[in-house]
Length: 119
Image 1 (spheres, rainbow, N blue to C red):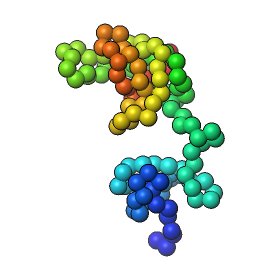
Image 2 (cartoon, rainbow, N blue to C red):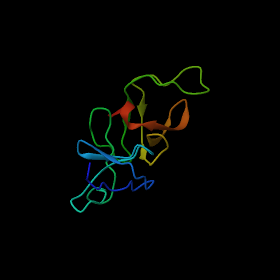
Image 3 (cartoon, rainbow, N blue to C red):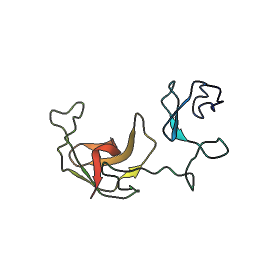
Image 4 (cartoon, rainbow, N blue to C red):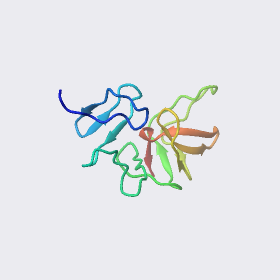
């Protein structure tokens, strides 16, 4: 491999590799697409696009439905599939949790976009 691959923009790791159309850093797990000049592609307006479990684009203020039952720490019962969550906010959360919301009966929490669909 004589190619000079760019270092990771998140952690500056040197051991990046190509996977299909993305670059991947094995040290921190960051994935990004490259532009023609070799820099990270951040989208048209620098804004991240978050999609739900079926591929619909989510935005702040949307109403979503939970598509599978979720366990909640400290609660004897979890969030049931089909629960509607109103007025979501998109955030850069921890560990893939990119939706900040208030679930009726549970209070404020963060959800992953992969477990909800747009209502």
